[in-house]
Length: 177
Image 1 (cartoon, one colour):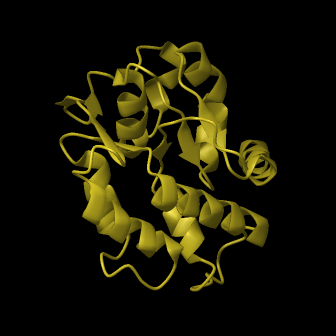
Image 2: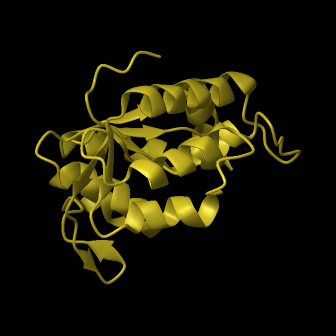
């Protein structure tokens, strides 16, 4: 994985997936190659910075709810501690204004196909859309995003799937059942 962008958004399932390296989940079918890609991305961010979060802490709050501020065990928790420690360091973490409006955000793209997009994930798309550079959103193991990829691209939002083969297969199985 090569990250060419200066700034990126990271869906919470990326650090959660990275944590599976030290805390395997018997119910998870995420391949180790996907876990490794998440670990590499977190290493890139914690070494170089470039993370984007929102200014009202919607993204940070979700990270804090799902990850450990202790910074251990696992690279996902290292990421959480890094975000906590650097959230006000403008050289490492960019903040973008988004406006919560009920269970969505004013900055979430207006597109008919996106009407069913997961409400809890809209903060990432809203932040990407509100940012003047439209940074990509990094996604690991949430197959729901796969079906919205074309509509997101039409709105100028790029999603980098760290595990595209896994996500596509999982999405297709879900659609077939």
